[in-house]
Image (cartoon, rainbow, N blue to C red; front, side):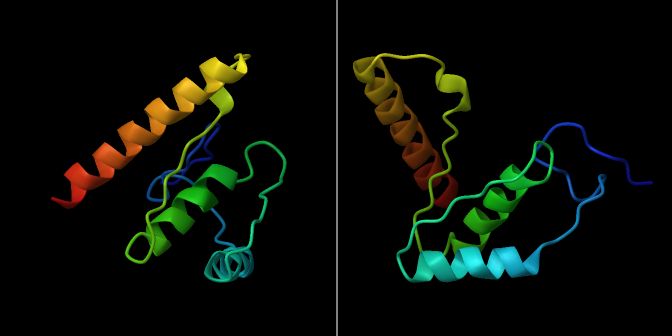
Length: 100
């Protein structure tokens, strides 16, 4: 039996989730054409799940790195950059160890 999730990302096997192929296709088109895009929607509407799906779809062609700034808090410029570099290193190391 499926349930409504109250925090993301959504586990599609156990929770209700509405696929949005139109938005997915538009995002993939932006990526293919090296264009920026934003994902703006109300809370709990599947933004993180959509971005995780995009990362999975482009993983074989690109080196996607998903980093959320939500937990960065109120940092100075130097502290923010140090945390960002650390997170990039962690993500890249994780990607390389996952593909080895």
